[in-house]
Every structure is written in structure tokens, then in C-alpha cells.
Length: 444
Image (cartoon, rainbow, N blue to C red; front, side, top):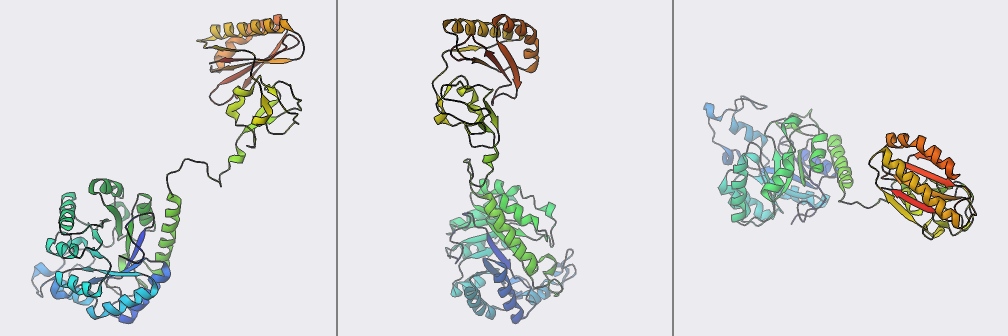
């Protein structure tokens, strides 16, 4: 298996520097390309293994002349003769790649190329887009039992599925399919990267990208969509006249791509819902004392508020602690903790008002209960808290009646907007000398 890629996927994007014909026929330049690719952080370097005669026929007939695109007017045999990598370069370049810490493999274009590469014991194979329907070649590659990367430029889904079936039937187990556009160069909008997760679902393989754009964004987007492999053509300079220069990255661009991919991998991370250590939870609101208190004092919204920072109880706990007593002496601006809260309210009433009239009735009942409780023993100021899931209009409609009611009972009341989580309004009735023990009433 490859040195750095025991399996496709797994959170590490396998980045391939495709040398192709960018050596321009110079072995020394090819060596420099390998060294530069390693310095840029490539996981692997890839060549193409063919000869003009394994690719086409030597003929001047119009069939053998490219009609459009980057190589329009060029004879196929002449193109491949100029672009090929000499086969006797492979062994020393393989040794160089190993020395540099990169995997070395190629795209074979014939069964004879596969046999040659097996003598070198390359760790995996790449099927080029134009060869993916060559079932003889697919079978020769699959029979090696080594991982296979297959590009799919121009292919229909049916052709991709058919080629996968051929590979699997012949013995290939680990396969990665590359989303590819056979345009040189390609535009980013031609890639339709949303196909990547769809292909993974349909094909049951890892999916990657063979990128013929010069965009720095396309490979990063592929990683965000789950791409496991990125293949990118690599050149020392687009000023060097080679057949693939127009869609190849220079070293600075390639290195930036590698760095950005690694950042994207780290940002993708894993599915997690727990609080992160580096978050700003300390700036959340929590319950703090707004006045000095003593043990036995009652927790009210006048001595406890939800404010920043987040060192106290969560603000959602306010309804649960209102009306309970402090167990410890606390100073203003100290956080309220679980250890500070004790006891339960002596009573609890729950109402579900349908409108202003019901809300008024609920409030009057609260006051009546407060007066009844207070009749048992008059001592200190206590609080009746009312939590209401009602809108402001309902409260406003009740205000006039409540003013008269609270005066009759000798108590004070306030309406506070910005109630605990899940509530719309907090209404607290502070019952002067009439209540000896706290009462908490939730209007649901």
C-alpha cells in the first residue's frame, strides 16, 4: 500500500502532484519537479506511462488531428511523442520519490504499461478519464489487487457504474472515483462539486477531485464536500512551454493549495455538539447577586439578575430559584451557585391565561394567596413571582386592574421585560409586611 495513504479518506486528503508532460522532455527538470512537489507538501507524484504507439497510430488522416481545444490542429502521434515520459526514467524517479517521502505511481495507458509498472511494484494505479471505458486496461489494473484511482471526465453515471463493476469483478477492492471535467483548462462553474456527496452515496466509494482549473477555491470546496483525493497538474513555471502548462499550478500556488486543504481538514473536524474549550462561554449571561444577602434571605429578581459573565448558574435557572432562600452570605457582584440555594417555595400555582381577562384573574388569585399566606405571620418582605408566557399586549391590558388590586392588598409590583429563557414577561409581586414566607407562581 502507499507510504502515506493506507486507505482513501479518513480525514487526510491525499494530494497528488501530476507531473504529466511538464518536464518538457528534460530528466533534470523532472527531478526538480519532484523536489519542488515534496517541498510543497504533496503526498504523491504521478507520471503517465505510455508511448505514442500504445496510444494511437502514426497517420496524417484527419481522424488523428485534434479539432478543437488547447491542442487544436495537433496530430495525436506527434503530441504523444512530445509529451511522453521515457520509461527508463521511471525507476530512478521512483527511488527519488521514496527518498523525498512521497508515493510514486502513474497512469498506465495499456496492459503492457501495467506489466512494466508491476515490475517496479508501484503502490497504486490511476485510470485516466479517457481510458475508463477500456475494460481490458481496467481488468489488467484490477488484477494487481492494488488501490485504484479513476477519473470520470466525460463519463455518464452508467459508464462509471459499469467501469466500477469491471474493476471489482477483476479484484480491485479499494477504489476512489475522481470528479473530473475534461476541459483544459476548466472553469470552476463546470465542476458541479455538489455531485461529490451524491456520487459517494450512489457508488459506495470514496470520491475525490481531478482539478483542471487554476482556481484556489475549487479544491478547498471539494474537501468541504468530503473529497478524499486531490489531483492537480504541477509545473515549475507556466512560462516553460509544455503541453499542460495552461492548467498547471506553479510551486507557490500548489503549496498554498496544500496549506489551505490542511486548514480545511482541521476546520471540518468531526461531528460534535459539546462545548469547545476555546469558546467564549464565559461571556454568556448567568445569575449574579445585585445586592448583599444573608442566609435565609429570599431569592428575588431584585437581588439576583441574569448578566454577563457566565460564572454563575445559567439564566434558565432563574424560575427554579426564585422564592427559595440563600444558604450562604453573599456580596453584590458575586455569582449565584447551586450551593447558595436551598429549600423550595412554600407553594406553587400554575395558570394558563388565554387573554388579558384570564391573566388579570390569575394575578388576583396570586394576590389572594399571598394575603392568605401572609396572615399566618407578618415578618419580612417576601416575593411572589409570576412567570408568564404571554405577550406584552396581554400584560398591558392587565396593568390597570392589577394596580388597584395590589393597592388593596398593600403590596408593590413591577413588570420586567427580558424574562428567563422560554418566557416573554416576568411579573414580580413584592408583598410588603403581609407575607412571612415566599411564594412562587408560574403562569405557563
